[in-house]
Length: 127
Image (cartoon, rainbow, N blue to C red; front, side, top):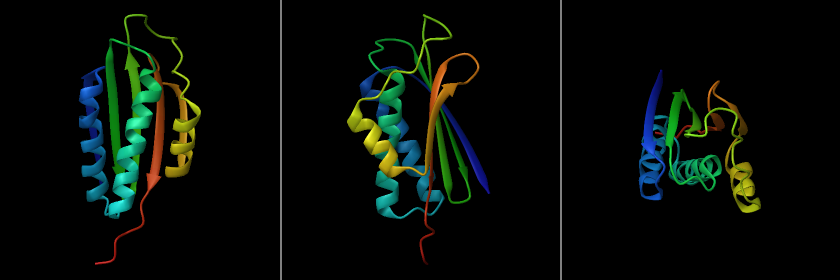
C-alpha cells in the first residue's frame, strides 16, 4: 500500500514543523521504529533547509511518498526568480546528516523549480 501527500507552504522557518510532522506520520504508517521516525524528521528539515538556502520568500513544495516500508520526500522551491535557479548548496554538516540518515538522496529539477529528494527505508517493527 502506498500514500502520496503533497504540501505547499510559504518559506518560513516556523512552518517547517508541518514537513516534519508529515514525515513522522507517514514513517509511523510505514512501521518505522522510533529512532527511524526521528531520523526522518530531522533529515526532512535538513532537506527543506538545503532547498530554501537563504531564500526569504517563495513557496516550498513537498511531496511525500510512502511505498511499503520506504519514504521518499521531494522538495522544490518556487520563487519569483523562476526556473533555473540552483538548489542551495547545503553546508557540510547538513550533507553529513543527510548522508548518514538516508539510503539515497539527490538534487535536480522538478521541471520548473530546483528540487532535492531523499529516500529512507525502514526496518519493519516486530509486532
